[in-house]
Image (cartoon, rainbow, N blue to C red; front, side):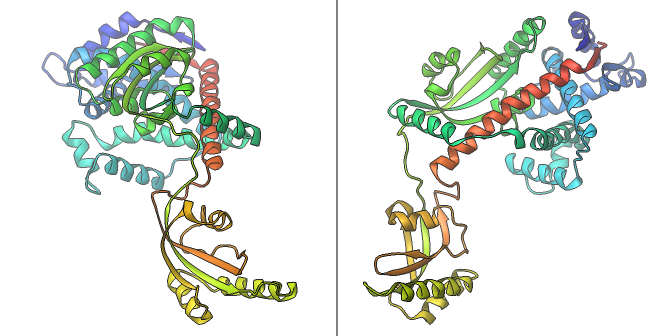
Length: 427
């Protein structure tokens, strides 16, 4: 990577330009709007782009629009704009597009996260001193990069049965140990010459947290991990899953406290503890299911051809079931005493063959026909509570491992793009 960077010059210049672009008469200077903040390969990031993003960040983090705050935030914001430019360039090279529908879905999610009424996002941004175009400039590269990673990296990531077995063994071994519900801000260090700069930025973010800025908003705007889009939400993390430098400090935190910056192999971490609990180890997936049942009795000792014929009949009946209402009508038509509604049942209380048939079954679909001691059963899930359709413990662990490996590969991908790029910082 080719880079020219004068941090002192940049910080002094940002005090003048980033706080409103005021000239001698207090009005904006058209020339300052056109000034170049950085060149990334053959594309320009203007001072206007930088100022627009700063306004958006300040609105989102509840920080005050003061020169000192702007000075502290500016270097990291420029780094992010450079990364986003590289991501958009890579998306363009691969023919990846962000559609209007993609953006509309993102706007709806943002309104939901901020508890705004549908369609009020633009007016809300205006009330915060920014606009929708600044938001689009931020979320478009995020969406494009997710698509690039999905195309280039996800197909190459494989998780084998032995990987899942190893992860499950670690979960079982951690039973009785603490678990922590954490939020994270991660700032990477790509090279030794960036060490001091990244450390200073991490300390400035901590200062913002101490001043009352929202952790999740800062994570969304500054963190460079996969959790950034979720406000830094890491969910429940077992003690053994943390990097060694973080294990002891996190164990000393109380809910609501944060720590950092802490240097690890990849960069600097700032962590917020929301809650803690004691791990229970592996547990069977559970949910409360409302079930409908079709029962086809088979007398004990019945010839195998009769049982086979009844299995064909059961499958034929099940194929006619379009929803729980039609399933109930089929049960009445069948006329067997055990057909009909089973009410609400705990998944864990079902016999193993029936539990396996419905644990990942989507509501409104008939299960496979299950042979029991007294006959054949077909089930349908009408509703599911408290367990979702997340699947078995193995499936959940597999998803977790895939996310971790995709994230690590995406970081390497981004690092390679930076190293190959021409980046000329002009401020």
